Image 1 (cartoon, rainbow, N blue to C red):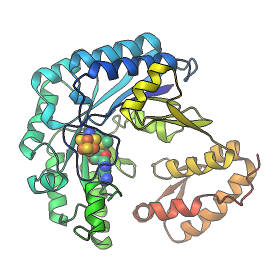
Image 2 (image 1 turned 90 degrees about the vertical axis):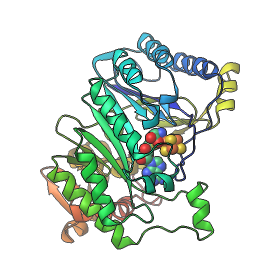
Image 3 (image 1 turned 135 degrees about the vertical axis):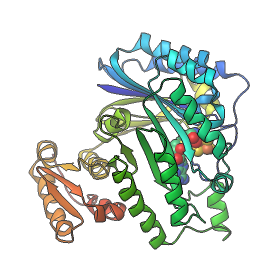
Image 4 (image 1 turned 60 degrees about the vertical axis):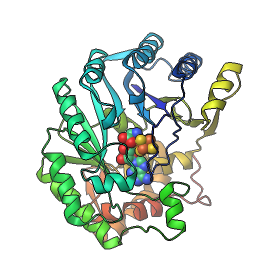
Length: 382
Ligand SMILES: C[S@@+](CC[C@H](N)C(=O)[O-])C[C@H]1O[C@@H](n2cnc3c(N)ncnc32)[C@H](O)[C@@H]1O
Ligand code: SF4
């Protein structure tokens, strides 16, 4: 099984925090779509003969594309790749693009998962983040998704926003859970260099919220999501039973995926590659048959580090049998030795043959993961 990610890099307005590759929409989508279709043809063999079980339209803003445009892309992919009947096809939507006709159109395309970028339910936060929509539009958008018959609806939320109090965050969680959503992603705000927030931070106009406040918001997230029936299957991802994102879970379980479009990443188990982060170059390189990506072959140590980095963030944790099989005794001993310390502190626990973070460990997951990273002088020599 494999996945396909399609990056639609257009945003009508830029959010203050966002570092994903995005530009103002072009007047001619067709030129970009032609390049995308061509890339899919050129890279038809990337996934070998694997069946594609998930397709994910992300961005940027896939909802700047019309139903017809999304149809052309999907149709092309289904001709080039063997797409599983039992598939998961997700489209990210910005709430202010949603109309009932658009939602019906998505349903007719057999798209079966909707990801709505809500971010916050308060207009104060939405303004601060420079979102295009307000809370009323967000509410209407979710209702339209359900009205069109979508069952698998996920939303994105951001916490740790400067000025957000614990009760603001509680309001956002309660409001989200009042809808019949089956999944949500909650990300702590990261102030990325080069973004509007990054520049404001440099000038001292904005600062990250206090660590204690962050921790309190994260704790509340864990407690309230659990009482609302969600399972935290990854640090930032929460799903009802049967509604975990297959596409993202595959990323974390080292399943191969093909990324199409400018800045999209791909992975096939042994190498990673990433497309040029510039639409004009992307289109022109593809047209001229020039290379449009960079590639990194993953040595055994990088594969080990990547496995630890992704698996430790999930509820399945580090699979010790997998580690022994793949990274042999050397990798296994390295993990066991380090885990001892974290288990003594109550930050990790052994769940059958898997090492997982406790709730306390999740609070400092980044620190724990960085301690697990195998340094370059270590000779994992398989
Ligand atoms: C690439 S965005 C695309 C979603 C869609 N364009 C939208 O904005 O609704 C995916 C999600 O990542 C999250 N995100 C992006 N940058 C972030 C940041 N700096 N800090 C926290 N969350 C972020 C947001 O929740 C966003 O919805
Ligand atoms: S968060 Fe979404 S809408 Fe906002 S700039 Fe990033 S990709 Fe565009």
